[in-house]
Image (cartoon, rainbow, N blue to C red; front, side):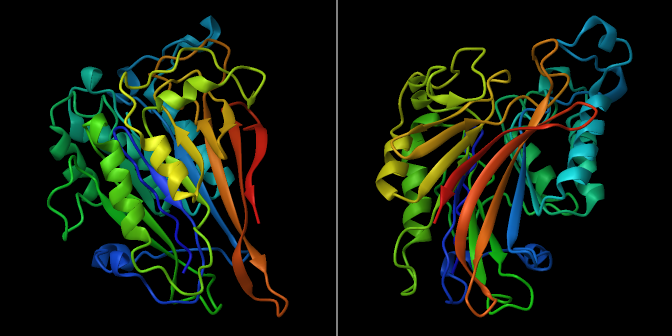
Length: 364
């Protein structure tokens, strides 16, 4: 069973990947009927692409002005530029899953949270591509509470988001859930779980370590015999860990243009991931004009880069999105085996949607 363990919060998301020929794990059995009808699976080419959208900061649409753009870009620039970018990048990348990693709306400028949420996610909904979302630190600042925002997201079309796992009643926050990813259609894994996303959204930063341990341990509680080592994993957060401050321009790819907006208290979440041994890369948002990716203790720590036009940015520095692509290994008989590699790149919102900073995060 390939496990992709995705932990998201207002503050997080984690993704682990492993493969075996066993059936669906117990932790995946709680997935709702709605989710099962819209199965995630590796493509016929043995790929699974994830589009990360960080910090849309959507507000009221056409009447909401852009921030930090060039003078010649300002007239007529609004939330609709964010919508246009999202439609273009979805069409170009053709992701198998779209992940919104918080601050989807900017509540302080959103008169009606329901309207803003519907408008912000509309390109994903209309694309018919499965998508998942968690909350950032601004989503609940409009007319809905954090619980209300998450409940609305769960009710939207094509979302795989859940409010919380039905079997768990003691996790802090809203938006804790699992998503199963199946094998290539027509392969031996067609009706078996080859990936599992564990997603959580937590308000209390101090509890991140406990939440991480809960999801990591549950993912491997019933470790399949065919799985000889922990799965290579990816983690998506909204707010970066203090460990992101460990880099300078000599040891990362991309740019660092602002300070690291992490919590003042180190929760030990990075240590938890390092000890688990499966997480190979972490992706965050929150600090919009950072987009670097560097390696620390065997784990890549990466920013997605700011996406939304109502979010603060830097004039002349294109809004951007990050793509992660996991590829399966071809077997000698022409079938599909384990995960061969995990790669990432960013796309800029310019005329060509230019791809930059391609990196191999992990390879087998």
